[in-house]
Every structure is written in structure tokens, then in C-alpha cells.
Image 1 (cartoon, rainbow, N blue to C red):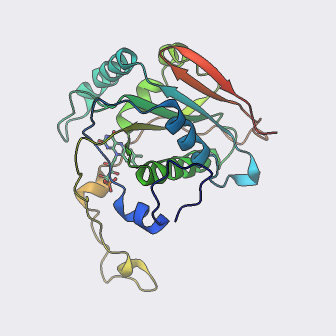
Image 2 (image 1 turned 60 degrees about the horizontal axis):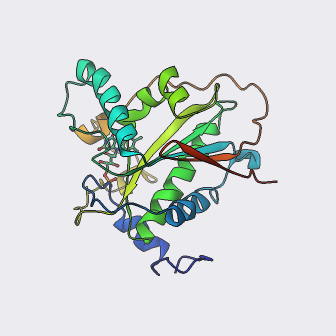
Length: 235
Ligand SMILES: Cc1cc2nc3c(=O)[nH]c(=O)nc-3n(C[C@H](O)[C@H](O)[C@H](O)COP(=O)(O)O)c2cc1C
């Protein structure tokens, strides 16, 4: 059973959450309430971080009109460039909550820190009966100066992991996985061509700056319909 101080958690093992998590692309209209979002952020910050830096900030957007405009902005660029597969009409699949995990790119492990927090958040959401999906499609738009200003993401911060959260509209089938055995302890006879899924890696220009020193601790931000509540930094 996942350990939690809160009572809203559905009891299930972390293994269940790992195997049952899906990238959910259809959401019910029901919003995710503030308590649930805070629980997800709490799970996220329990991820390990290099040198215990906790470099992240979390930007939570729940204003649907803002999400729609951000999706349109993302699609503008993607339509010119993305020819390999059909783009969704809304990159956020009408989910009512976007959590963007950001940090100052001040070292080689900041991106890893953010993505570990992202996985914690997604597994916790699964355990709480919520759906999530990483939205790489939104990354470039989120890192433009105009959207950083709109979402009050401080200068020098990079958005690493945009994740939508919502109540799933139904069951999502498992995407399936290649078995890992082939790569453990033995070499396959010929190098395998990456599958289509593996080649669909999203590449975005959010390169880390060279290590510029120790990241400063940041506080977290909660944006809901343009209102911000600062959550105190850890001591
Ligand atoms: C870095 C990253 C970016 C992703 N970007 C998108 C995206 O923009 N849109 C989307 O629908 N899914 C996106 N996904 C979800 C993947 O497509 C999904 O994880 C994969 O197909 C496996 O499915 P599963 O998560 O249900 O197991 C992204 C996943 C990762 C890790």
C-alpha cells in the first residue's frame, strides 16, 4: 500500500501503479480539486534530487481558456513541422489541469530531477484514480518568452515536464512494451532498429546551460485562473 498521510488515497501497491498507469487522452469534465493537486505536488517533491537540490518549481494552470490558447500556440508551430502523425485538436486533450515542472537549468542533473518528480506525480495520480499524460507537444510553446510571462514563470527558468491531469473519461488500453530481457547481460546478434514508437522521440531545444554553480532553492507556485499562491520553499 502506498504510504500517505492523507485519506483520499486508493490503497494499492506501487507495483500496481507502475503497471496500471497509462497516458490518458480522454478526460471527464470534472475538475481536479486543489487538495488533490497539492497531494500530487507533495508526491512529486518526494522524488530524489541530485545533491538534494530540489531545484523545481511547479506551475499549475487550471484556467481552461488559458489552456486552450496555449494549445493553439503549440499547434501553430507543430503544424508546420510535425508530419509524421496526426496532431490532436487540443494538445491537452481537454484536461482541466496542467502541471508544468520547471527549474533553472543550472547543472547536469536538473532535468533528471524534474523528470523523477514527474514520474512520482504520475504514479501518485494513478493511485488516486486520476489520469495523466506528459505533453511534450506543449514544451516549446511553454518555453517561449510570451508564455513564460503569461504564466509568470521567472526568467531563467526552463519548463522541463508538462503534465496534464484529470479524471479519466474511461479506461485506457495499455500501450504495450518491448521486453527488456534482450538487453540485460547479453548482446543481441544484430542491432535492433528502434520501433516506430521509440523513434517518435520529441526533440526540443531546451538544452541545459553548462553547469553554472549550485541551483538556488525555489518556492513552488500555484496558478489557478491567473491567481497565484506561493507555497513556501523547503527550509
Ligand atoms: C517526454 C515525453 C513526451 C510526451 N509527449 C506526448 C505528447 O505530446 N502527446 C501525447 O499524447 N503523449 C505524449 N507522451 C506520452 C507517450 O506517447 C506515452 O508515454 C507512450 O506512448 C507510452 O504509453 P503509456 O504512457 O500509456 O504507457 C509523451 C511521453 C513522454 C515521456
